[in-house]
Image (cartoon, rainbow, N blue to C red; front, top):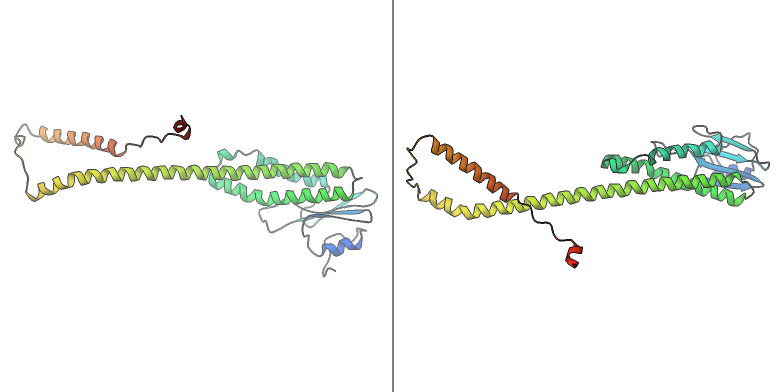
Length: 256
């Protein structure tokens, strides 16, 4: 027995077992059937506050008349309830994950996860209701719409996850390639330094200063020529250091 007021309106003439099974909170989405009465306990579409779940109750009496009540935002019919889900899923489905960055994709996944769970439980509750009350033809339409909502939400969730994984893999591959190229450039620079280090060291120790005749020849042209040659050699050295490795042959090329 519940220890507080039932979320179902007291004016509803439903079997007492429904109120006993409900307790004081909404609980999970489900369908209950007793003595010709059908009670659907559903959740409103997830909001930014995923912990808050608005409950919506739809009662079908033995005569086929539907009544609705809610603990949060009111929704008078199951048709309107499903339309809310369809609107949210359609809005998300219109987005192109390929045009979103990692932050936007993560936000989509965070928003879609509770929507996927809610739509899956919604479909399950309506399927259960259909099994218990096969003569209610409107439940077939509701169930099929709920299935389509679940399918679209799940596809959008999987698409966002796959795109995020692909984006992460591309970024990791680009970083690995850049890191490898930097390591190769550093290795080449170290080879050049090791090759010229003995020459520079011995020249400094023994004070090597060759007489070449340019000391007094047409200043400052020899100095400017030295700067020009040094810059040209610098560009050649830079090209050597930044030289990219040839692409490795693909598996298909190896098989050939």
